[in-house]
Every structure is written in C-alpha cells, then in structure tokens.
Image 1 (cartoon, rainbow, N blue to C red):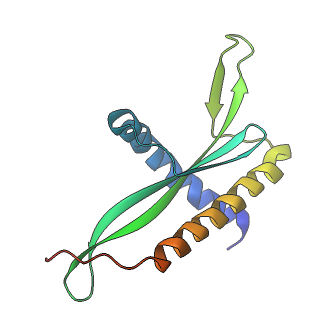
Image 2 (tube, one colour):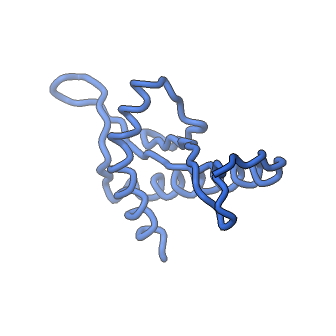
Image 3 (tube, rainbow, N blue to C red):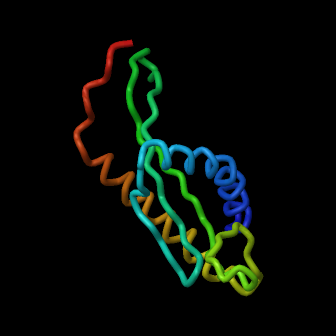
Length: 124
C-alpha cells in the first residue's frame, strides 16, 4: 500500500471518528496525547482504551490510536480562522510529513506500552 492509499484510509476513518471525537472532547474534556504540525497542517493523535476478549476468554484492555488531520486557514470574507480536510497538491509534502511523523509517534507509544508490565486481566 502506498502512502496516498494509506492516507485515504486514514482520512475516511478520520472523517467518521472526527464527529465522534469532537463530541467526546466536548463531553469529557479529553485531549490528544500528541500533536504533529507542519505549517497550517496539524494532526492530533488520540489514545483510546478498548476492552476485548482474548483467546482465553478473558477481558483485557488494549490501547488504540486514531489521528485527526486538518488544515487551518483564514477565511477571506469573515476573517475567522477555520479548518478543512481538503488539501492542495502543493501541500502534499507537508501532509506526508505529518502522516509519517504521526505514524512514528504511534509506534513509539505502542513500544512504550509493550515495555510496561501487563495489567491483570479482568475476569470474563
């Protein structure tokens, strides 16, 4: 899978998660675990815990990460700062940088959590 295909998958998932994330942020006050920026293009990395049932039928909590990518711009008419998920072709290098750095940061977070002792699983 090339970088553009990976971005499109992330963006489609991001669009679905974006509405939920914004709602959760307003309701719970959660903040992103990390932010990556290049110019006006920014990515927020969110850490979420999910409970799953493992192969031994025990409930365990795992950490999952999502990213939200957006671009800020100054609206010419209203003079207000706004955000969009559309990018010009000359912004693709910055977009690529933000995606790659987000991926690297998520890998660091996963390695950090993998190095920690596992928590005691809950009984199913």
